[in-house]
Image (cartoon, rainbow, N blue to C red; front, side, top):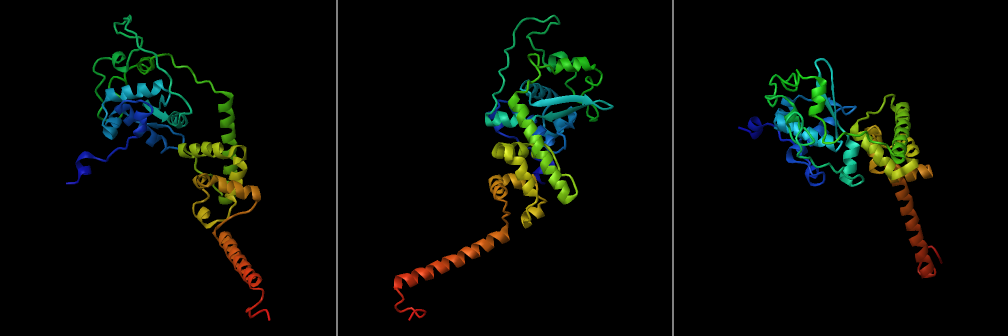
Length: 304
């Protein structure tokens, strides 16, 4: 019998989530799967019950809550409960994740927990999800319709306390540089999408992966990125046409397309072959002329 029939499908884990971010094995597993689902949706939001997390990645309800808390403390995981019946929706801040992994941003230093007694009998300045939730809430609801038997009955206030980070979470203040980057990326996308709509009569797909590509394009081309993107959509190249001028193809050779834009010369396979043949003819003519000059005309059938 095949292994997958007994064990199920394998689930990928990014080792860098442990090595660079310092996450526990369960938190790294949770984040890897959350990134997968974030990139599967247009706006990044998806919902999962705790029983579904257990089926997909093998983590218990307790491990899922601990992982969520760890990721919330470093502001990587966004959560919101919505819908009827209410379901917990998640989204990974992929831009912040890339900044952490690349070293552009430093992970926040989390405060150490104190051992002072709390009024309700618990210890430490932070109450974990296991401490706040009533006894017995570790058990998953196996019908897959709720987060847990207890969570469905608790108030939103209690749930918020259970998921609260060690210190009050402050809203991230956007610096002038961040705002300028976001404004530039919005301009790049608007220009690209408009040119794409004009050519294909449809709007291009935009998701978390495309958002990262737009940011990378801005990093590589700066203020010229929008104009290059518009020029790119107009290039008549068989490869680009087959791929409907996807932004990934633009990013792959961004500097080359920038040069084509700057010189207003489209370069495709046919144009390249023509230039190659022209250069070959020039080289042959130069070699012939050199032979004539060096021979001085002696022994040359064309010069008597």
